[in-house]
Length: 198
Image (cartoon, rainbow, N blue to C red; front, side, top):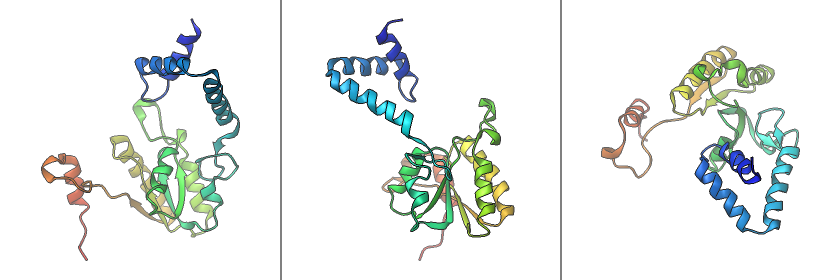
């Protein structure tokens, strides 16, 4: 197998990258300078050698604790549970959440062999127990897929007996949408999650 084929295969293993896109990326790199390729290689090696999961929440970090867990200004009474580490950034960019996070590392998917044991569920439950009542709310921010919903239902069942309030992200109509173009599932979730005005 040629060097180009090997690199193409590696790029094609990334999510959302098909073989054609992978080959385009390889050709783009080859048209650039050697320094560009070495800079990319150094960045990849740095990630492999210096990034690891946060000891507490599972978010990616260069240190034992991520910057969120290490920040004493964060509200430690609220934990937002997400499926993957990149979703922490999406919530952080809103500027609307000042609590802590917990990264599950995926979602329940029995067909793919992913059960609670493959996720960081026990670590979440241990965090709640160890807080001695300090954790008063757990926000389940799993995706609105069948697997994400099943994960949220499972987590709610496990967390509720420990005492904290368990909430779910609201689902509904995107801002700026026309009702006639909103799919039935989204519209149904918006109706079910309606709230009083004022």
